[in-house]
Image (tube, rainbow, N blue to C red; front, top):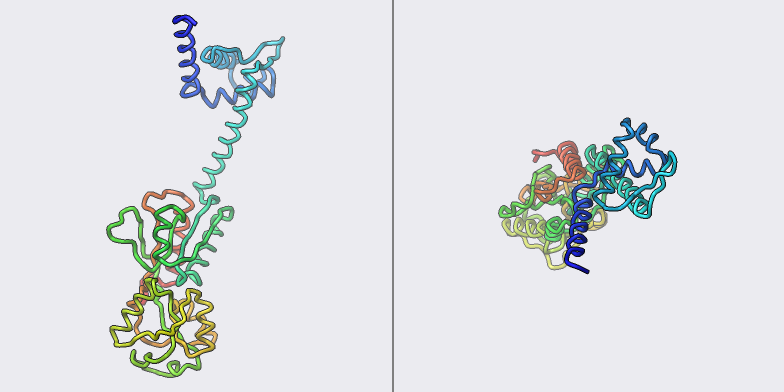
Length: 327
């Protein structure tokens, strides 16, 4: 191959690449697709509300850039060449995907579809999380939601690595972590709960020393809630026994406390339900130091409309069901 032929081939290839990189327009693909269905330039022009020369010009420009014929005229109709068929088949796929992208984007803008992955600590899942998800489902019935329950030390890496979109936790984001958007959404204190038959249930003014010697159900020892509880008790000279039952299941904890002399921690919103049923009692000691604030945390750069809607639903649930700002 001569240098001249090589240069011509390279020039043609550059023109070809430029066509697909920047020249090709969606409207040209729509014209091709309409032409494949209607078979006549006249009918395509009518469908696009333009003149026949305008349609012919669009086809001619594509052929000139590609250096090949896309169609052949056979009387008043057209037939597609092998190149025309190849481009039309891809045009059909592209416009199909564009159509679905438009629907997805429209739905996302109005929060009616999409997907949100939530991570939450167990002490917010009984009341706050279900209420927020219910509100979200009402506003976005076509959206998918996944919920992962874990301790705070596991949840922060999950949101940082985008495994979940947001987390609900009692532990605030670290002050030196600008990648996180952290907002307090509720105050739902953890309170001491015992069976209605427990001796502490009958104490009008119990003291911290009255807790000494009783068995406990506690969160796992690595959790922030356990560490806060342990610190609080030690401040009053109370030591947790070695034979504690470690459990993150609040419903199992409540059931176990109801059948034994064990003390457990429950969110006030959940504890109030058991008290109302007459099965449990709240020990009236000040536990406000045990991470009473509930935080919603996501990546600061997360602009997903569905995530934004879910945040709004958690803010609503926090104000209505957990009493933001209440002690």
